[in-house]
Length: 378
Ligand code: HEM
Image (tube, rainbow, N blue to C red; front, side, top):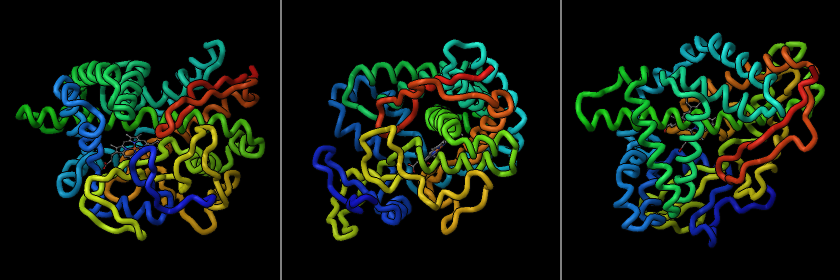
């Protein structure tokens, strides 16, 4: 933990920061901490006039079930979780492979060879378009997701609100024609709004995070000759184990927000109802340099042989969250990254990172590469 206090009040951000993983699990699985951070942030960071002007946008975001608590959350999550079952994700493998091969073609045809738009955005966007059943290309889906995350990260900015409102309108229109939401309730205007919000959230959830994982996986594997050899030789489990280590080393999401539901004491600190809490998913508090991911540590397991970690299962890291809101797309993200590693190694066995290959994006909560140039060695 590098001397980071387990729980501290951050004067600049005016919120609690939970750095200790055990405490983080407690907060993420405790009814005393609610998920409704958007609602709290609308009131803290938007003026009344902005809330009025963008009330369609705030109403849309309020309906995302990641913002709800039990029992409402449990009921809304159930059908999505059922859809994203392990057998469904396994059945997607051939489609993910086709999409990956098409994106690797696009990478080969582009100059310079930038992994981020062609491969990381390309695969995550096309896979989510397939899962949700929309026709829009990856760049459009990623523009929507980036626009919404800019607003979520800085709600006081009117320009972000305006752009996010436009993205919401376009998403809503696309989702009205999408196939996956068609089997969800649509009888009343309330049903339709809820169904659109649920699928917008699902789409959003699978884009920036997964793109970040895909680009980081390629960057890191090209810097580790032993692992690269193992993946090229198709050693069993090597790709999956390396993906797991990349998740730990470069978590796409560094924190989750929660709101204190009632006055209480936690680890000796007196917390007040309505206080915002930032829960670190990295055990390291607030990292200031996106390039400096948390250390993978010995618990990451052997990336070459695929041997299990010594004292900690892969499910125990917090990268996909913990408790009732645990990521419904975790198996899909893992599948996309492992397929990419295998297909990339088979197609470009002599690939290398280009000079000054990587440029990190500026966002400190959603961490991802803006650019990753590679030399494909062909
Ligand atoms: C590497 C990629 C991914 C990472 C790091 C990630 C991370 C997370 C985290 C940390 C949460 C917990 C949020 C909370 O507790 O407030 C979460 C929830 C969620 N994720 Fe992911 N995610 C990824 C990929 C995906 C994909 C591919 C999908 C869609 C297929 C997805 C859909 C969702 C949804 C719908 C939730 C809300 C679950 C709930 O509230 O019950 N995610 N994700």
